[in-house]
Image (tube, rainbow, N blue to C red):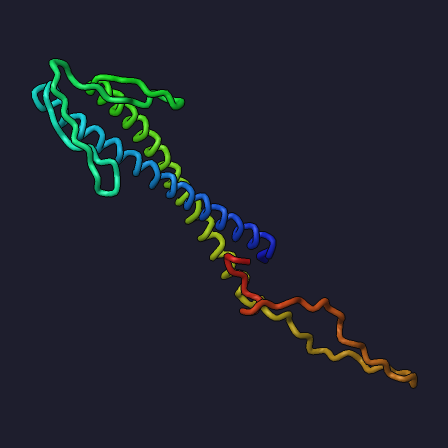
Length: 188
């Protein structure tokens, strides 16, 4: 026989796995945003470096709200960029070094994304297994148990002249019923 506590435990497990899956997917979306930003940065640095080895170039730098500033680099050497070196420290680096740093970071972030994807796949498999177990147990619980075998022998009537006492109905604690009956759902 299926135990309601076991079914409740499975429902909680399914809900926890769903929350975990949502958290992982949110993290993957955040990592994808950072990866896209790094791809744009790499493309810009590659363009700057490809034009006469980065010696002379002019472009516009967007600063937001549809406004951009003109930028002109006209030097004998490759231009420099301010690069976040970590912990809020920025340093000037040549464009080629900035591109190398960006590529390394992009590789590290891609590795993180791959790990998150593995976690997502494992969580999804666990969720599917838990949901299947829950559904199976819920179906078993819904199946009516076979009625007890009825005896063909009737009990003998009491032979005393005393007043017959009718047994009262067995006292049961009344169970509060939900809006949809006794069926357990994943929300229970």
